Every structure is written in C-alpha cells, then in structure tokens.
Length: 168
Image (spheres, rainbow, N blue to C red):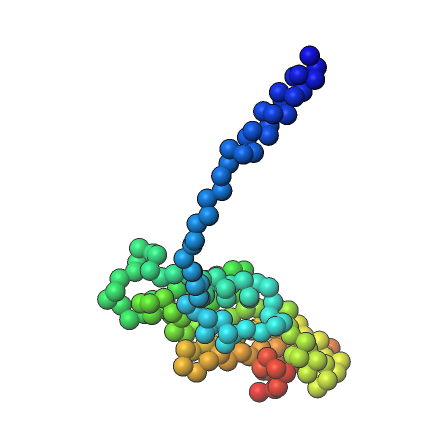
C-alpha cells in the first residue's frame, strides 16, 4: 500500500511537467536611446561626486511632455532640480532635449587633478570651501570650473580652477 501511494504521488507530479507546452514567440526589436545623450556626454567626468552625478542624470531623464505645464506654444521650459548639495536649472526645448543648464554645487568631493594642482601650487594651504559650477550649452558644450577658498593661518585666498587642474 505504501508503494502504491508513493507511486501515485510520483505520477501525479510528473504528469504536470508534460502539461506545460512552451510557446515560442518572436519579439520585435527595441532600440532605446537617451534623448539627452549629448548633455550626458558633455558633462561626464570620471571623478564627479555622487550627488552631482545623481542630479545630472535626473535632469537628463526628465521628460517635459509628461507634465501638466507642457504646451507646444513655448520655445523652451525652465525646470529646477534641487538637493541640499546644489541645484541645476535646465532649459528644455519642446522635444524634451536639454538646450542649456546652469549647475552649482557646494562642498563636493574634488577630482584628483584639482586636489593635486592646488597641493602643488599652494603647499601648506587648506581648502575650506569649494563651489563646483557647470554651464552647458547645446552648441558650445560644457564649461566646468571650481571656485576654491584656501586658508593658511590668518590668510585667505580664492582661486578658480577647471576640472583638469588648470588655474584660470
């Protein structure tokens, strides 16, 4: 009797395996492209701080057409993205492409090239404040600069440097 019940149990489980016939279906090809890839390529840096990168990706992924303020009558739409570390003000055209941005972030992690250039030129000075600014224009590309406040004892100095470590 025991063998009979185990046999029925095994047959019951194996019969369900054959009941499922897989259906093969051919799917159409899907191509996904970012509408703001030019913006992302222009501002891309390997050593950008995480909050900066996060907000820039959020601005690139923003779709103007999905919001109630969208109308075809306007030439561009200005949208602000704000986090505690900084903000981005982006202008979008009616197709959703970023035309230009103004970005400002305070006290973010500096790239190695900037830190090394400051340490080499201003040995003994300490960076007490930094402001990272990016201006992007669809036709001109991106301009990335850092404004640094340096301190050495009672002396205070302000310098401007680009993202490659070149002083301006």
